Image (tube, rainbow, N blue to C red; front, side, top):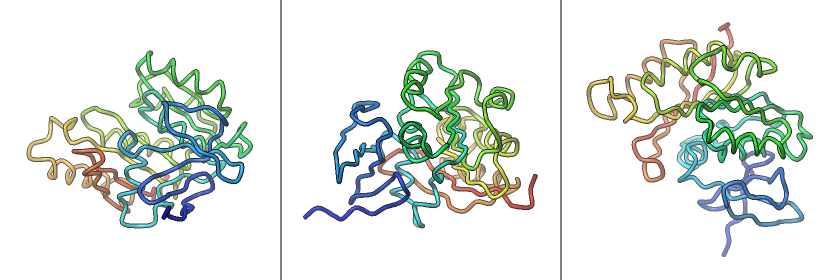
Length: 237
């Protein structure tokens, strides 16, 4: 018997161990994902083995809706790659023809990936592709309309936590939500095992104006990865 869908947000739902987003561009898949129609609404499969945000939604010990931006939000995605996860965030934040009035600023340094992001943006109003270094505030500043309600960082670089603190300090509004997808193998400069590297990152986050809500282990979906769910303290900035 099929499990009854559980609504996580306006455009996101869970069915058993699978996730789906309400397709903003009906009839079109982004990276070959499955689509299905339910009550005239088309849904796209959101693969948790190809998306740290999707994996975190399945692995969190709390309410998954805490991890998602609201419709109409201003969102900043640092390390957008080819745009698979970005497209699912756009489904939720903007909707078809951006009838929610949201904005998703997607920053990526690789020109090849940027070509795919740019193509996505032609069909997805509200998606703003930015070619540049996601570690630098000056890359983002000309394109974001105001302070972000939601930030996700997924960069395979050293000093991931320090970069996240700097970018969140510049762009995330007080009370806003942040997700840091952290890969242990990228923290080569840190001594010790994976857990000690994650602990060091958590310490860096806690010493900033970010409150760590949850450390989410993605084991089984994304090895050597955790996602830190944070909130910017209201009295900051």
